[in-house]
Amino acid sequence: MSVPVIVIPGIGNSGPLHWQSVWEKKNPDFQRVRQADWDRPVRSEWVDAIQQTAVTVRRPAVLVAHSLGCLAFAYWAVSTRLPVAGALLVAVPDPTREQFPSAATGFTPVPVQRFDFPSIVVASSDDPYGSLEYVGRCAAAWGSRLVTIGPAGHINAASGLGDWQEGFALLEELRAPPSSRAASGSSPSSGSSPRHRARD
Image (cartoon, rainbow, N blue to C red; front, top):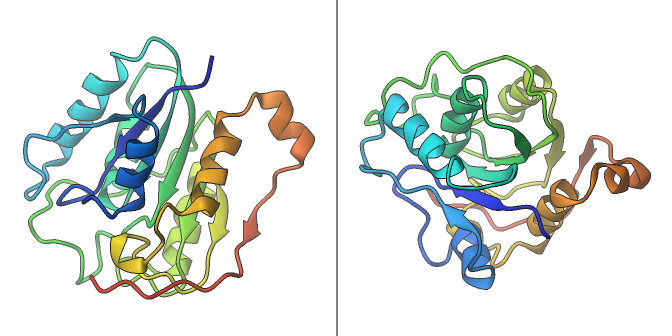
């Protein structure tokens, strides 16, 4: 039986061309977190919504977050008592940047506790919402493997990734049995394939 997957979009929700939505369309068993307000995120409400979704899953899941969803996930991860199989965190935003949406409240300071489950953080070299240095610090604090994929903007629909097979391969890595991950010799790495620049 495969490991469940919970999808956590960022502000505004992920549209039909976003890789999260494409993955869901191809995998109808994936569950998306539903937020009461996608445009004016309140941290406590977003964290509660993740918990409400996670408790419906009978087995530890891999959670796949994008952008602001990564910060909500980090807050949830350090507070929940539910077991977690793993996390794929893509395009972690810096809440202290000018570009960070002013409508989002309660997302600072970013949790820096180490996760007690496998996690991978994916970063773009030209993400307007978070520098590689910032994302690297988050990955180090969380004990996550950092994967950089070159210039891909905010790694969203505007990045032209389609079904983003490289990202899905990382997800499948996290869903694999621990013995398989150990055998593959997974280690921090950097992707070298350039992507289209996002237009956020």
